[in-house]
Length: 310
Ligand SMILES: [Fe+2]
Image (tube, rainbow, N blue to C red; front, side, top):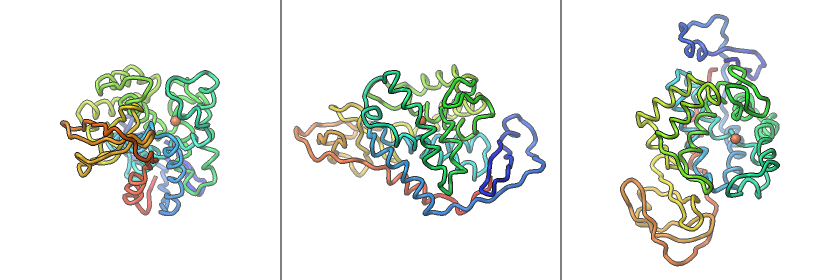
């Protein structure tokens, strides 16, 4: 992997050596140190919060993608700094969706071709949006390239193979897995096995084959059980019976408590049922309220290192 540090020098990581089974010896490698300033991190994640606030259908998506990406990166042999960047990439990869109109972003069901063309602009929009941010050098690859495909048939630039940032290749898998295993109004949710079958079929076409194999192994070994269907560690998602997969976030402390759909304001009493909850509609509507993933952002900032080496 080649990465551009803040001083503009090019460096190389051990990741590619590990990927291809080579010894972990890299010559002429400079390991630049990047200082992670909390204020800068907060301001970058604020962009991501705006996207999430506008699209409650995907509540918890950024947290889950960040979790999948960080764990995949760790298992694939990334350095701690690189694992951090992969996790950060999960939170910010879709910042360009800020530029997509609500009527498209929140549209249930499939999009028309013109609408889809606009959606496909979001990697470029995100790249431009954060280009002058102090942390842009560590996330611009993810933002710009997370919809590229390993066979060169993705967008926006049809980049292929190692032309695509290693972090974007990680996020592509994490993003697709979450899309498949999370309920959406226009399609049924896939099981872990079904989602892994899709990843297996698409490895070498949509996905990096090495990373896909690592991810599939982890998924089938149950390593993602605490992420699927959650919006934060220990917080399960439930779906509104009226709005479909619009979500309340429930912790053990809300068991048998009251939750309100953030979309329509419908009120429910929660009844624990196995690992999840059953909903009892209380026959009334409360105040609809937007749920923000502030806890996920706070958790990530809290665990961020002061410095990373890439
Ligand atoms: Fe995206």
